[in-house]
Length: 224
Image (cartoon, rainbow, N blue to C red):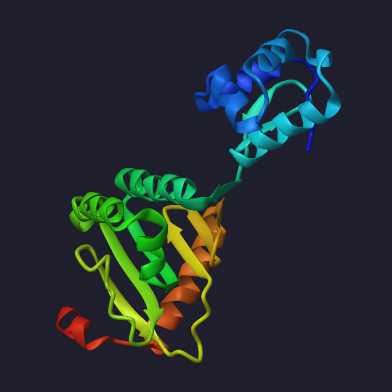
């Protein structure tokens, strides 16, 4: 990471992604007065605080140069817990409403969506996604015999045999590729925004879809 050279870079970075001083303070876990002080006099705060702020911007797609700030050519975002999962699903909807295109969900266990989002919240999300109509093409691969097709109103499911299924999910949408790690008591999601990696994943997804999956009986009418 390239470190800050002056406090004006912080204000410029905030403006680039539309954050207020309070927004940055909340995400960095420091007080708003500290942010204000940093922007006026960078060296009035400790180095570890500066490093924390740089790291926050780095995770949200902004990098510092020797003279200013710029958007990264790729970005990595981290979401965690139920609130983070809802933020992630909003990003899926917002991205797809802007760009349309394919959505590829691999190793989906639909019950995790209900568990971490709540059934009512997810059903509202499903309505939003269904409203996009032909703008999107949604394919999901879940474990054999899992018949909870919660995205059935706007997508198509296929099964992967139990011996091949791993409980780690991958979610491709737009130019973004999400890695979803569901644990019993925790959830972490990392999203890489990188067009070439996302396209490469979708190629592998299609190979699995065409040659390794089973069409569930409930879905067979849709593919005839």
